[in-house]
Each structure stands twice: as C-alpha cells, then as structure tokens.
Image (tube, rainbow, N blue to C red; front, top):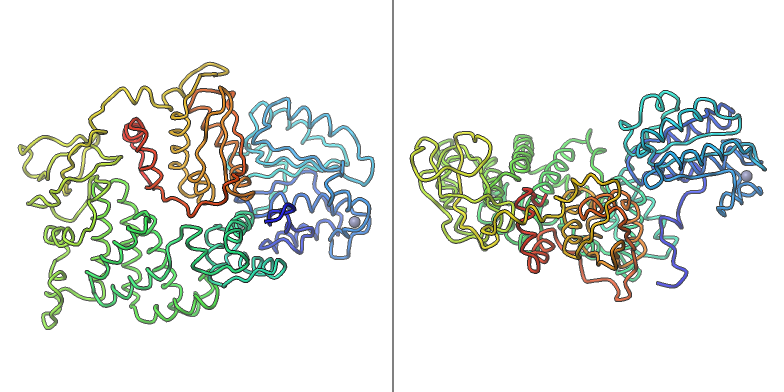
Amino acid sequence: MSNNYIVSARKYRPATFRSVVGQESLTHTLKTAISSGRLAHAYLFCGPRGVGKTTCARIFAKTINCLNPTAEGEACNECELCRAFNEQRSYNITELDAASNNSVDDIRNINEQVRIPPQTGRYRVFIIDEVHMLTTAAFNAFLKTLEEPPEYAIFILATTEKQKVIPTILSRCQIYDFSRITVPDIVKQLQYICEEEHVEAEPAALNVIAQKADGGMRDALSIFDQVTASCEGHITYRSAIENLNVLDYDYYFKLVEAFIAGDVPQALLIYRDIREKGFDSQFFINGLGQHVRDLMVSSTPQTHSLLEMNAEVAQLYVTQAAKVTPRFLYHSIELCNNCDLNYRNATSKQLLVELTLIKMCQIMNPLPQDQPAQQPPAIKKVQPAQAQPVAQAVAQPMAQPMAQPVAQPVAQPVAQPMAQQPQPARYAAPQQQAYQQPQQPAQQRRPVYGTPRPAARIMVNVPSTPADQQTGPAAQQGPTADAAGADPVRQKAFTDQQLNDAWVAYIIAHPHEHVVVNTMRMAYPKRVNDTLCEIEVQNPSQVEFIETVKPQLLAHLRNAVGNDMLALDVKISERGPSARMLTPREVVEEIQKNNPAFTQFIKDYQLGLA
Ligand SMILES: [Zn+2]
C-alpha cells in the first residue's frame, strides 16, 4: 500500500448522476427536475446507509450550479463552478452532520448562513445528514427557515430513519426513497474497479463481498479494500471468505446433499466441522435458511431474478434445486426459521440445531411407519413426536460439550435425563435443575424462570460454573448501571475494563452491522486518560467503518461508563493486519479470560450472542 493510497469509497465516488450505482429511477427523476427547472426548496433523501444519499445530494448541488449543464441534466464537470465543487472548495454547499451537531446552536449557525446569498452560481445548497438526530429544539429552530427560505437556498435532508423525522418537516420536503443496492449491481461496480486497479478477482469472491455489504456500496468498497489489502492483486473466493469470516457455501451444498440422502450422521458431522471452524450456530442456521431460500428461487425460471448472485454460482443452485422437492424447500425454510426464533431461549443451542438438521434429513426420507418397505438407518426410526430417542442419538456424536444451555422446546416431555456430562455454562445460562416433567410438579425444585413456561419443555441439567456463583454485586458495579445518572454532564472516572465491557455490549447489541462489529472485534479500546480512549485498526477502511457509527458508539460508551466527556481516537496500527477476524464466541471467551465480572454482567442483563 503506497502513501498516496486513497480508499476506494472516496476514489470511486460518482461525479455524475449517471455513475451512481443502483439508483437509476431516482437519479433520472432528479435529472428531469433539474433540466426542466422545477426545483423544490427542500428534499428529503431516505434510505439505508451507504447507498448514495449524500453522494446524490452533492451531485445535485453541483449540477444546479453548473454553468453548462448537459442536455440530460448532468453537470459538465469542467466549468469553474463544477471544478470548485469537485475540489471541495465551493462556498455554495454547506454540509452539517446532525449526528454529531444536533443542537439549537448548530441550526442557528446554519440559519445565519442561509441569509448570505451565493457569491457565484445560482444556489446555495445545505445538506443536513442524519437529520432525524436533531433535538426537538433544533428541529423547531430549523422549521422557520424551512418555511420561508430565500430564493437561492435549497435544503437536502438525509436520513436513515424516515419515521423519526417529524411530520412538519416531512410535509415540507420532496421525498426520495433510496433503495438497497442489489448484489449484481455491486458486483458490476467492483468488477469495474478491479479493471481500473488491475486487480484480478474471481466472480464468486466479489459476490461474497457484495453479499456481506448488504446493499450498501460504501460498505462494499470498504470491504473490497480490506480484502484487496491482504490479497496482493488476486482475490480468490477462498481468500475472500477467510478474510471476511464467511462460511463457505460448499458446506451448505454438502448439507443439502445429506438431507436428500437422509444421511443424519453426515449432516451432524458437517455441523460439527462448522462449529470447529469457529462459526456461530445461529449464524450458520440463518445461512442455511438463506441457502434453501436461494434453492427455492432457483427451482423455477420465473424467480431466477430473485437469486442475487453471479451466473457461475447461480448454476450450482439451479443444479441442486432440481434434486429436491418443493415440499422439502418449504419445510426446510420453516425449520430453519423456527430454529432461529427458538435459538435465544434454547437451553442447548447445539441440540436445537441438531434436531433441526435431523428433521431436515427426514423430509425427503419418510419414516418407517410411513413406508414400511424401506429400511432406513437406525437413527431415522425416531418419530418426530418422540423426542427422547432423538435426543439420545444426537448426544452421541457431540464432539464438544454444549456451550450455551437454555430451555429447549420439543414436541413431547422427556422421561429420562440426557447429556449428564458437565457442561461449561458460559453466559446467558440461567441456573437450572435436571429434567422436569411438567406433569410431575412435586419432583425436584422449580426452575428459576421469571415467566410461566408452556408445559412441554426439556430442561437440561447445567452445573453452575464459578462465574455463576458470584451473585449480585457485579450487577450494581456493571457499567450500564451508571447510565441512570441524572447529572447534566457526567464525568466519572472509568477503567479499561468498564470500557471493554461497554465495547462488547455494543458489539452484541448490533449483530447485523457486520462490517462495523467485525472491525470492533479486532480493535479493543484503551483508556488514555479521564476523557479519552483510543483504538487501533488495521487500515483506512476500518477507520471509515468506525467513523460511520461513531456518534451512536460514543453515546453508548459515554452512557455505559458515565462520562459525557469521553472521546474516541481511531488510529491505524503499524503492526499490519492480523491473520483473521475473531468470531463472536472467541471474542467473548477472550474477554472472559481476564474479566470474571463480564460473565456476570452478560448473565445479569441476559445478553446472548446473536
Ligand atoms: Zn459545470
């Protein structure tokens, strides 16, 4: 990486409406409005992050000021005003990030600037990003300006959360809804960048990056930078999935082959491999659900367009889809979905997943009583209504003790205990008794659950770990307990540990912000002094990831440690990139090693890994 390295998100930021990826109909409408001279005074751009809202706002500001706009309503990018915009020295554009500047004073400052007419060009454009973050007072101060703006003033408000913008503002704006960018659109743009940068990339690798970005071009480019940095000019599918901690789709294809064959042992062994690679079980079951969904849309030509992947990978799906029945597809999706819904409350999450896999093996391989002529393997003689033998069969191949025991809904009560080997209860594990028959309330003690439970449940015996036995006080010492402070400006002293706990809590609370939390997992904060902490990340993309969530993250950290003056510095490490990202479980284990109070904290707040 040379010194003049520019992150792709900046280098390939579109300069015209035409080059904005994946928002064709919206940019077309904007161009038409500009070329016909029908401009509103206020626009609201809504949509997920990283899909081009701010980019379009900047292009819009440039285009309406351009001295020689093209016939299609694009900026010429050559006149003095366009050049000023492109070199970011134009006075006709003012941007306010309301995520960090949301006070009345910030808006008053804007209101004052609105009064100054443009020195060159026709319009002054005010872009207010994350406008929903403005305080109520700031909203009200802004409303007056919005009601009677000067002729030359145009406001473009951008937000990821339209429902949080007050109706009085909404009613004064033309609203444009930006959509997620599709995987093929992102892949196309990445291919273009690869050509420009002389990087070779396998289509499947770009597909993985696009899927990981979840509809955001900015995230896609940041992830692309991250992968490129460690691939030296040649991005393979394998290097991409390793770098991004993505599960190889090959596992899903093999699993479905096992389901087709009714091969329960094979399915359970594949699942064990996946666990041993460090993948979270819920992440896996969701991935499996997505795989079956992709098979479903591959099964008929009419729905091929719903398959968001390149042709080469898509063909694998079409081929496998031809081997399964529609009943298998619908039923499997339902099973994956149920497993996901029950996951958080399951005493044994591993058992829940294994039962799900067993049921999927049975869909295309009817049970003995349905088809007496066949002689399926012993493990398939289990009837779904009788959970006990299934549970025992499942318990055999377990390579590892179950990690996160919780309650596990199953069709029928179970008479005998299973899984009696000691299991490390790591977190989110309410203290439990042995199996309890709902019909025999006199047996043993009552479970510790706060809410009444349905009758048919299995309770798995969980010996308490030392962490479980430290009761009480950690909850009061826990970082979030400080959040209730009513002081206007809190300035508590805090420790590295509190900071770490707050960091982890944020990661756990935002499981879907993959890119950000992956970055956070690799960079734990260090306390520098009473009002400053710092993190070290690996590359400029990761600095950007953190910057995008910094306002929310800081607010969370400040609350957690009870210090409103806390600031966060993001630095790029000189040690170079680490080998790979940690899984959520590894992160938790790492922290628990040095921090018994954390175990208690997670337990007290009933947090779990999603
Ligand atoms: Zn121009």
